Amino acid sequence: MPASSHGHRPQLDNELKTLRRHLVSMATLVDEQLANAMNALIQGDAELGEAVAARDSEVDALELTIDQHCERILALHTPVAADLRMLIMAVKVNTDFERIGDHCRNLARYAAPLAEHPDLLARTTVPRMADLARDMLRGAEEAFLSRDRVQARTVVARDQQVNRLHADNLSTLITQMQEEPDASEALSYLITASKAIERISDHAKNIAQGVVFLVEGNDIRHQRLTDPDHPSSDSS
Image (cartoon, rainbow, N blue to C red):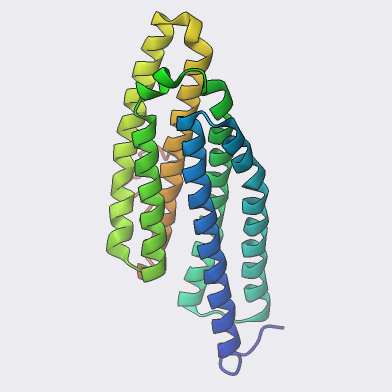
């Protein structure tokens, strides 16, 4: 039976503080995974890549912990509007963090096959994209910690820069595949890596949008779809 909203408020506050700590732990872990995955890729370090892949289970376990904690709060307490926003935001960004973790695992696994082609990686904007995506992820985390909606909106705006770099990569790499058919396998890994980083930036944007929702109660997803006849799309 849900607890009363007055006598058990301190318990709810403690539960929410624990939830916040779990989310910070998740953000820290995923940030480390992204940094190590890109170091493995750029340095051709297959051993580091395997270490990143092995830690993906930690991300998955923490995702379950956060989801279960949200369920516990809903089952045992009567959250008010601001608390509910925190819970909704937690569930959504938890999924984004887990998916970033998946992309990090995949990026790390490309380290071995690309180790023999460092020149190909150097010709792309993949390292620059990774730096931007990690900056976005850290910015979203900082915005969450300080409840800074302005910083969160800045993170959202930066996603377009990563999208442009990915488009440039795609064009360049497809041209290279036509010119260097012997390197087509390595180039295909780079195309996939570029797409993975583009997706990571999308998830970082989602997390920042979650912060805006938490602070303002305003869902800023799909704001450009002002025309009711405009076909919806998943920008994740």
